[in-house]
Length: 416
Image (cartoon, rainbow, N blue to C red; front, side):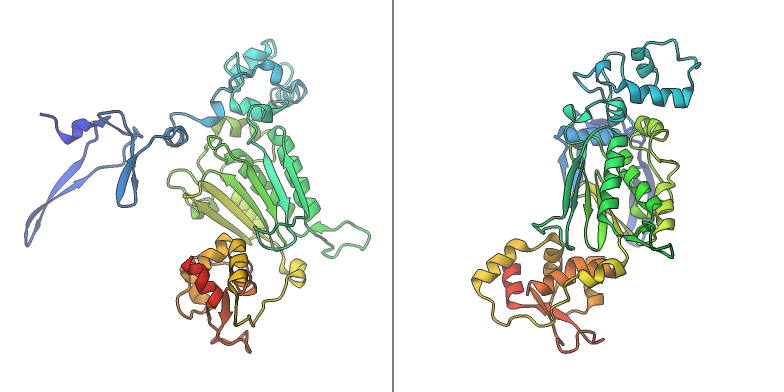
């Protein structure tokens, strides 16, 4: 007769304990966290918990990520079908090899195919993803999504249809880093900081912080996810969005303290000699030390990780439209429909969370937002300006008794 344990492969080894209670003996069963993940049932299926229920994993991408978390496979060493040594940028690879190993190294007599194989960048026939992204002449020919999509907006809203600058930054990782950093520099302000009038001045956000965050996004992204790194410059912030949420049990607070998990170990090892990357989990702490006004947002449901770098308020506050304290009392259905089409995800969260009359602090708390400027400019101001919420004391916008409530338009939006 089969036992439940025989339905799991490899077998699990639960621990049991009898606990005496007033109602009798209770058997406590504990299943320790195993090392042979992912576990399969007797039909070879993998199950994951989803809310109060469970489902079995069917998509290839999710399976790949599970095996990646278990250390059984890494995206950066997966061969890229159809590539060959001819797709290597010979000048870039030679410069890297000579700089790191020297011309008289033990590898100098090997063929290029043997070199790439010994360095973990190919299998002797095809390049793997690390080899392609570090030294490929045209990586996007094979992996078109692995680029940086950069946009600069005039305001603070993601759904703004206007933009100041836009660029799809392609090439190997060093080219993407240089292009993305140049994009940021030309769309941020330079300030004098006591320098003479004729000097260019310093970037409003320290370059060290931006370098560290960009490199982290390029190296530690999930390459099993076919999506681009997104770089967005707003009037009040810079956002860098990487495909793939934080692996395993790693949290945003963990990486603030320097904890790290190498999702792409081969790519990371070589990139540390090509990009300004120091490794050891020091990138995020170093960026925070240079510029503390950084938010880290892990989004498992959206499978992405975002870094929000807040710009100095003095550089953009004067150009930001003021908060509208009074809104129209009567909103027609036509206007309501137009506003509904323009509601951002942030404003939608605010509207769905607002019950009755609530203070700013209560709204921030229920939304889980700690950074006041982000709450004001991504949530509160857009909702006020759109006429979806209103202040209970509009004549005294800064009153300590100030609260917010849904307008007629806001209530109609929530009902939809």
